Image 1: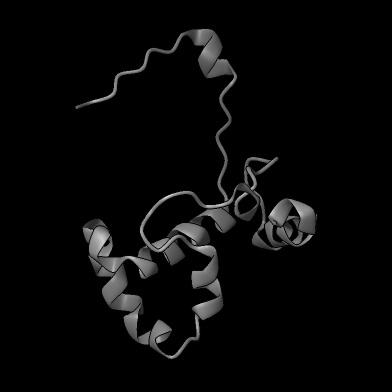
Image 2 (image 1 turned 60 degrees about the horizontal axis):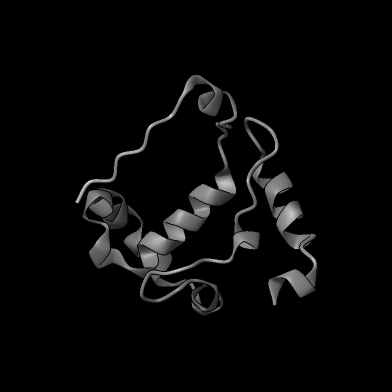
Length: 102
């Protein structure tokens, strides 16, 4: 069943658009975790399969839901600039209060 949402001009003015390398990395890891759910990304998966085969991603898998579901917000804070450098986003992630991560 399709979901239809209506937005007015004021709603659009409150939207933010930004490029987030951290978010892109997060989604790439999610795609690697559940390859069967991402047919659209098969060409990319074929290209990177050999490169990631030797990586130990077990610690990343602990942070990623195995069967879909919620991913903690602190792993992908929304960028506060239109294009956030990856290093800056990683610094924000590292600065997360451990209590928030629990």
